[in-house]
Length: 207
Image (cartoon, rainbow, N blue to C red):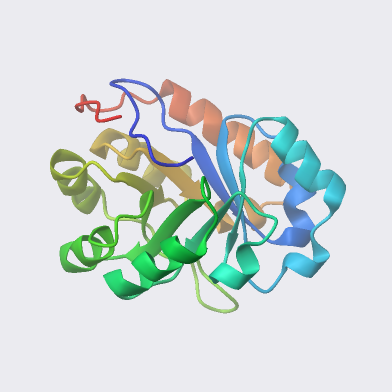
């Protein structure tokens, strides 16, 4: 489950937001904490790719609503209030991870945190013509000092990923950083290598 903050100086695992049809390009992949299948795309999910991800010890999550979470290990919910998060938690089966958001401000992050999810996503996963929006390192630093709920910080390039590690992100999320590359698996390996070489800021372990 994506619910534990990383110990001091441990490189954050990577969360991949993936189109279902392309999941096989990074499965099995190095250092993945979770694979999140993008909502509305699950019909094209290849069973072999899904099994390869799970065989590597990586939970399979889906971005959508509670109805779409059947058969997955977790749900990423685009909620805009704490009540919606609490309702989703009641509807999900036990041991199903619940992540929320695309937080861009302190107010949004705190509102999402009130619902007690397993993690809050900082930044926004793009869709269609809408690009990804990277997490703000300052916001990540503030959150990591004050809250125990894990932070998942979206990066759009390797330099941003390093900055988010330095700020104290528990997990680094990627989307178009991989899928705009002609070789997503190689892009993932390069990211993992860069994070392994990064020097994360010292933060207090909370999990």
